[in-house]
View (cartoon, rainbow, N blue to C red):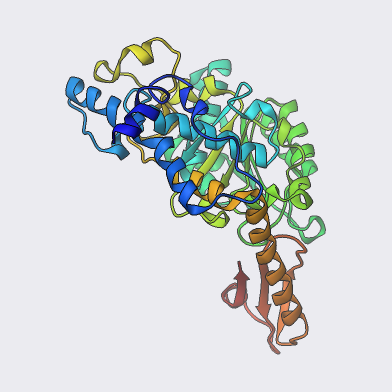
Length: 397
């Protein structure tokens, strides 16, 4: 414990940004041997959690458990600083624009699930829009997605953001666009809503939908949305992980015009549940909507505005130290091994699709030559009802 105290508690983690001097550079291409990796993990977390957390526990009566302490920088500086580092690492692996990174004007946070991430972006977009058009227009706000968009968006809009149930637009898609959302359909919907006196709020575009792994055209959709002042959120929960591979990065083209972006590390990134990555361009909008600082949470570090408190980036106050497990994955595997892992799954999916294609009992519903998801159903001699069709669809991921 003395060594941890001297390495991180006193010299690095106890100062804003100090952990970057201790934690090694971004993950190597080939990863690290386990013995050295374990030492790095101790240096990256230990003292910066224990020392300051004890001081705050004594002063404010907070629980001294590590998971509780990550909500504020002063309670767990190492946990906060490591999360910032890891989120920039993953962002760089994805080649996210610098505006989404802490090294630019944005930043990232580890949430628990898709729902939590969408809750936060919806609330930020809502408050930003209402400050412009007036809070009396709350019932006029409209949220857009496609029939393929994850239902977490509709749930967040209705239950958390307070959007009227009739103001959620699930726009139809078709096989002609590979089930991706058409920019023309989006424009038509927005224009019709404006003519009806409603206020466009947020568009959720998807990279890899749940049912068919459809890819929405991010660039052209963002162009339409930006014309009408609509917040653009990109949900790449599943397929976003594969975009660290150069051959799949083009599916994210257009992300530079979005306001927020997410992927799910516990879906396809060798990371245990829960670990959901969310990046935003405008930190101010997110923090303004979610921040709360009662007297018992105030301290000199927070009042100085030189540090960041992740409690202001999420719905709840308390949070787990999620960054360490993702950091272990990145450090132990390296970028090259993670890419090989993803490619092996995609190769297996192609093999599976080939076997299904030669079996006349099955039909591929949506042809996909990318990622590791395939959608097929069993063929019947008689005509099936819609319910029977739904019951026989198989999605293999």
